[in-house]
Length: 248
Length: 248
Image (cartoon, rainbow over all chains, first blue to last red; front, side):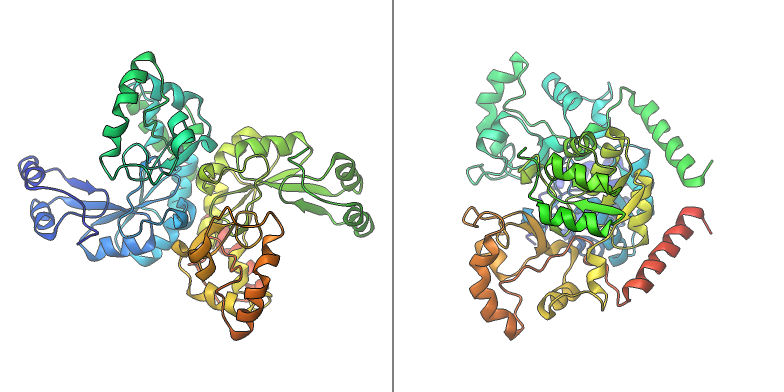
């Protein structure tokens, strides 16, 4: 099916060997035979939905939980049934409508940067949350120096969806190539070839400390900054969210 | 200043006569002399911000409260410092970043369609909420028949920002003219002239019950439907939100 994304025998064999508890897909789901093999390992399968329609499709096709991925999210959007960028939905509107449409647990993603966002996501009906950008500030994150510098200075209104780095829409901090050739361009080679086309520019500029021609993935919560390690951050977020949720 | 929107002596004289408790602007604020006259009546002044930068500007220019208007919101976006549609922020990401940047109360708007959204907005730090689309379902709403029919059937993923109805970006349910000429078109006449350009098509089609060439404003919470009157809805939302917030 066109809604299913590439996932091959080699990846599947690795999953059968390692038996992870959870296998999370993006851009839909793999072919049924491969998905059956993944599920036969006992793994819980999850994937991202950017619309109610995608969420319903994922539930019908065997997902045990669904990531409701709002417009705010950084990096690649998990779109697979629609290619329409104009109709992408914000997390606050997406989560309750997905919760109403499916019976599996919903994981909220996109725009959540601190305990306030976590508590808000639970109020919307989410059973869990997924935070991405906030972990890019952690010393453990393998971000390049130009990416880290852009993250530190970026405001929430300085990210945009762009297809020029990979050929598929993804959210990053607006930089020179996004301003001058995009952020959305019909000239971008199809996924995943666009990265190769930009490589000569990136190879020259990145060693000089420039983020002009590289992807600077970030979500719209990028304005909520910190300097904590991943473990400390995770425990702090959990503690703060629990305090807000339980009132003590 | 270019950030200030049209508002004339006649409107101001009306406010001086009627002395409303609150005066709410859109697209920034009127000229300082007019704003001073409004504030001299004792009215609290509020306006919409679509970015942190706009929120800070509104506070510095005398707003008593700020509407943090997320990407999800229906109708015209209150943009006035930026014209960049690519960087518009979802409500879940916008509200906490605005709350952190200003000291006046923040009113959350955009994508809120029921008590879940209200409680989420308070968790994000909002002091109040503004719901629009959900009131278009009320029998008191003066929506046209084609608009009402579109609202009843639309899903959250079927709205888009468009400039073709007025010349300024506003969110509505995707219809024929948005699909065929937009939703964002460089050919749209400047605000507010675009409506006139479309009038001949609308005048022919709307009496036949067609919503093909008219604005069908709606926000992304349009999937959360009901059939209540405005008073009943308001009391229900308040009761449900209070129950969730207080735990009983």
